[in-house]
Image (cartoon, rainbow over all chains, first blue to last red; front, side):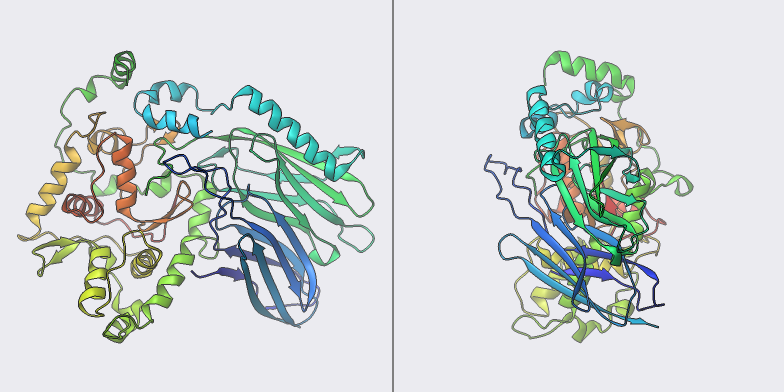
Length: 106
Length: 159
Length: 262
């Protein structure tokens, strides 16, 4: 499965506030659903999302079962310097995904 | 909740009349009371005894929702986002979901703006609460009412 | 369903439901409206933005599968078909299409599997599997924005008629025909949800109710269960005939794959 889509502007002016949009592929099984035979489907969710900018954490989310499947998470950050913006999702059953995007800041 | 949805499937056609006049789904009142208490408890864990003031926070949700499985939610907080005056965290709670916590987002001056959007699940017509924790230790809040309609012909578990 | 409930239902639904649905013409082209128009602003926004549309995840999957060698023939789709953006353009807009090998129309999923088995010498992909959905979504995506163009000739006419007959036939415990809601009562509501004209313009699509991508057949199985009828098996001729009719009934409307629907 395509693991995630991230949308980061390729370039920005120093000090500009940029919008970042991310979409992760994950069923986010709440643990409250049942099969047609009545069995509980076990919880399997994303627990944490972290965004780092050249290694420094700039945004973090703790997620709970109330998050939708294939969730969109959008936020802003200040374009401070050129480099790599990295995104990490972690969750149940060893779920761990990392995506990166480069940004040129002038 | 499964029982209620199954009932709706069985009575899909027959219930269309009854349901049309009673679009808001109803959770058993005992469950409702328990979940409301759970939200207060979750709120207390974050806020402690500190007062929570209404204002500065803007929680945006569509008032009428196509499907409670995926609802776009946005929170924006008025803040200069400087090192001395910024939003440290944004917490979102619900009063009728099986669990009260939705998300907790942690920001800082590097965010530029105290704003975030996410897609969430809402189990029922209810009030959603957003709490912002500022760098000076104060708490601010906003709430939004949403109406969640269920799909006409539910197919839970059917592939 | 109790007799009391049945009487109540029938009474409120008015005499229309007692009368055989008029086998009149389909919805005229200028009046055809996509289900997109019946959704909330927010759900439409989800469809419009590729980077926020969860269906894109499956399209990207399909793109990767398109280039992957498979089967005993060790062949990728791209080995024969090259760049899908060129070769698959307008293909989904004319499916279901007649397959001379089978002597009947097949849908896009069946066409893809025919290539898998016949050309790649690989096992067929299961209906609603991640891979088949990905490939179908990727192929259909190449028709986005193009008008549906089902051409009917002597070979396909009998199947179109079979599909139309099925659309107008009462089925299930609720004894409802598709036409009664989707031709006669669209723009009304059923328990709070809008009744659409039921045009399959965006399949496979991301349905919020499923929290995932699914095919037209998956959606139709949901309809059949809704009217308490036995759902047809995936790939059944009854289904493909109905899909042919539905697509033909939507001729001229733009493909929206991957659409988002509640």
